[in-house]
Image (tube, rainbow, N blue to C red):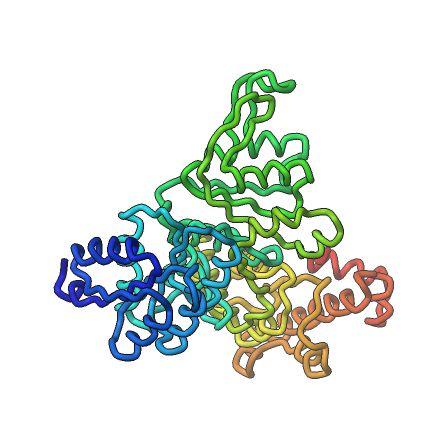
Length: 463
């Protein structure tokens, strides 16, 4: 081992002498400096007099529990990695440990190589810079906002654990990207990551897709077929839109979580499986439970660690960064040199609520790059949803909707005809929005004839 690794000091806290001695002998052979304590009070006393690079603590101990010790240690030394171990696996303990910034949560009996790898990962993380750019570790997930930094940090902490994860978020927020990031940073990253969207498969076929089927089990089952869980064995199964599952399939999924086994459709023998489940939903599952549409016991099995992915309107600070990312992506794809969005165009985007979230912003920029012939995206190339309202709707915002250029130079570069065309199109779009997409009412607001409005919407390709 390297000299700096030999100097790494570890505190082991466990009320069982045999466990303390086992870990002490194991880790001293690895070159670590080991101190031990039989309870939380003794551990805190040691921490007062000696610096530790890492702590390993049992959860269930007489007197002060491991979770209480975790909170005390973190209060004194926030950057101290703490690994929790227990012989009694409990979802509540896992959630509490993670909320209190435990580095990892390991269930006894553990594999010797597993504990070595976790310790190495914890010490390496502590030695690394506290100012690293977390987004660099998660390709595809773009963001520097406080909301996204919290998610990056949570992914890094929960990924090495076997805990099931439930990802909340509206459509288009990037839930599958978060699930992939968890798998990529897990200890089974070389194993399969198998996604399935529960709502995209007919109810009659979903059970077969999840659990597989045997030949002859139903019309069309001409061969045996492996399902999602069998394909993902040893790796990660990602169940998107989990709230769409029927009660029967919910019951079968619960068995997979509890017993690590399932029965293929038409089968007579159960199959064993070792798979981590990451689920995602755009529904409020607690409301679904209250309505009797989702099993409460299944919910708690899935939501060992819940992650909420915020909608784009809650992290507007990431919009310029996302715009830059998508501009590069689609300029390369379409062999164009679109380098930026005009100042006013970016103001329009910053004032928009993005009901379709990041996916909608990507589509807006993709269309903008496709429509533009210059190297800058102008406001008229940004096609926003007419069913969504721009931020506010104050008089200032209304006035801003009819600005033709960001500055005087852009105004005269574009010329009168193009500026007036842009203003006319924007006013029609705004009138249609105010009129609930009724062309008759929009024509009245614009004080033009219905025939004239119909001609202009066709001219500007407004649906």
